[in-house]
Image 1: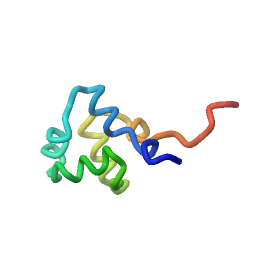
Image 2: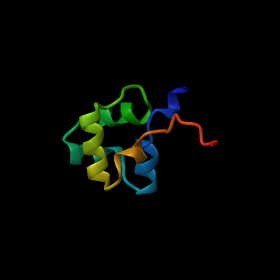
Image 3: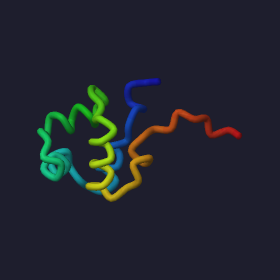
Length: 72
């Protein structure tokens, strides 16, 4: 799995025209922490990821990259 396929936080932020700073403020996190998540240098805990999903008003599954093959 490549480094850029772990999560979609950065993509969802861009789709919603929101910034790392905005997310950091809403989660009471450091902006650097959000940057690390967006670049996949670090990953949020599952509990934190659920919080991210709530703040962004998306299903938590939308923040995860599927590792399952799409072919049936």
